[in-house]
Length: 257
Length: 380
Picture (cartoon, rainbow over the protein chains, first blue to last red):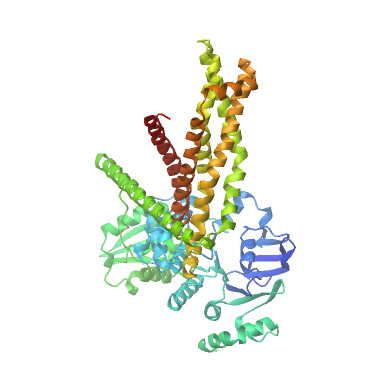
């Protein structure tokens, strides 16, 4: 094998009742890359992410992490795997009964043994890292705005310094400055830590500035996976529309395309 | 995934410089045991003189880099080259990045207060909250009455469909469970009466006992408590989740009065259905008492009914019935009011549903006691 594959999705089929979302979907994620996943509304981007992280069982097909089948892992392997990924859900999915700091501490507490004071400090560090001020730590999720919840969710996803980061529309609902800072943070982390990032996004700026490759969901499967410059030339009509519509053109020109 | 090597740290004095030699993996899973040592270094050496030798470090992540950074972040120029020696693919960059981004400060631990003063503080806060709740509930009641008045002036504004829906949901569908419950209550009262009165040779008075207890109190109380547990929580949850999803705000913006659309149909349905349910409950309770009397005391149903006719005045029935709409009103008002008070988060929804059930059962029993005193004074 020439490339180092960390996640491999093979022949996934997902259906809700008679409504088929994915049919024979294949996807490979390379170690250390930032992979963007795009697709029209209702093409099952979030569903695919949930399937990969094991929240939804596919109706057919297999998922491999580091060459190991997700479904045949022992509970111990599964636990080790789960502590090596971080997931940011679309709306943060923070525990509403815990403060932001306690939210970030939750995975530390669950998986590691360390002095409580160090835990608090690490939590505060992750909160600062995700771009929230220190005053956010003692607040409850209900006291935060949508963008702040997202950052707190990222802080929690990063708590265990994961190898793989799953992000579901991380920059949606952020102001452009915050979104750019978010992009830079992801890029920095993936470069310094060798983080693999799997990102569902519609933010064309994110796609251009940080994604190494972009996967396009269309016709119930991954229609194309390629660096964005190559994807622009792809002949699939939806991809053409996506990158050469008015918004795509602007993002491409700003990024010095 | 390679297994982690444990983190170690070694400190060496070199002239006036302090050289720190971390070895092993500095990852979130391994740094727990070197935490104290790093703290000691931080407090006992001048940060300006500290140099970190990064060459011995295995794998490092942000938490490890953060902890190492603590030894130099207080120096005048934490980014100077003098603080680092040796080479490592990422360690130096990561440490510098964290010094730049993260805020190093003592986390303030929230302090828990206990003791005597705290106990009084809590009692005081609880009383104030209860007072506030009472004022708000009366305010809500007033607002509902006003809305109802305005609907009386323009009756076509009344929403029959949701009203009938609630009547079916909270009323008709609750009848079986209420009937079964009061059947057993009536039976239990009859059993107790039979046992106790037999010792005086006055077991025939079981009829009066069952009749009066079920007609005056149990029929209406069981109905009210079931309504509070079953429908009140449903009202709060339904209105509360609409509030959470901003549906109430959307109604306001569209010019719909949420009181008119949500509260009035529920209040109306409860006030109408409570007496009907109470009637069903009374019948079931008396039937339960009758069955037990028949089985244990040989009082035939025919005799039971004749005896009731003779010795129990119809006013007992009306006492019970008169309370039903009042209880229905209390339950609907509290349920809707708590629903309207749900905030933006799931926590508050749960809290409000609990509060609404507890408050309505509490109020039903308090008002029942007030009714009892009132009817006592009136000699009914």
